[in-house]
Amino acid sequence: KLRTGADLFGGAPLDHAVGVELPLEPGDDTELLEAQSSGLRKRHSPSSPPSKRGQVSRDSVPASMAPFYRVHDGFGSLMSRKHLPLLLDAPEDTILGSCYYVYPKKGLIPMPGKFNLVRVARVDKSCVVCIDRRQEHLDTCGLVYVERSGSTVE
Image 1 (tube, rainbow, N blue to C red):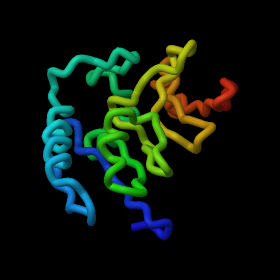
Image 2 (image 1 turned 45 degrees about the vertical axis):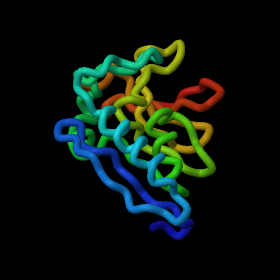
Image 3 (image 1 turned 120 degrees about the horizontal axis):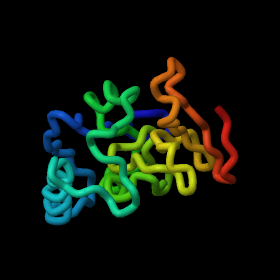
Image 4 (image 1 turned 90 degrees about the horizontal axis):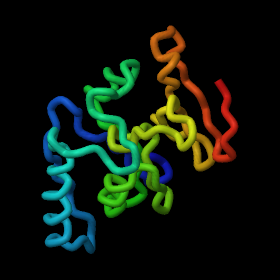
């Protein structure tokens, strides 16, 4: 637990995904949690089609990020465990302070109008980190910071 009261969380590894049971918080609806957790396990299905939002396919996770995704499919902070199903559904969202900092595979999408840039992490509400696929083979792995305004810093 962080000083802010938030919990850190990490997604299951892509190669060996397993279901995780979370302990109940006071006031949680057990029927709702059971329905949500059964849906969460299905999200790791290798045969699931890519998102309509331009999600990067499983085979094309940026090579420089592959070791990370073998351990966690993204990580972030939760102000409440009730926010987790919402974040899993929409990784780019921030819900009352809960958010991903390294996006899960589902959240790896090209930046609008800059398809060579794939968003991989969040710096803050106004800035994301992208990998430039044209430069990924270089030692720097082509990291680019993209501000909400669209300006970039390499």
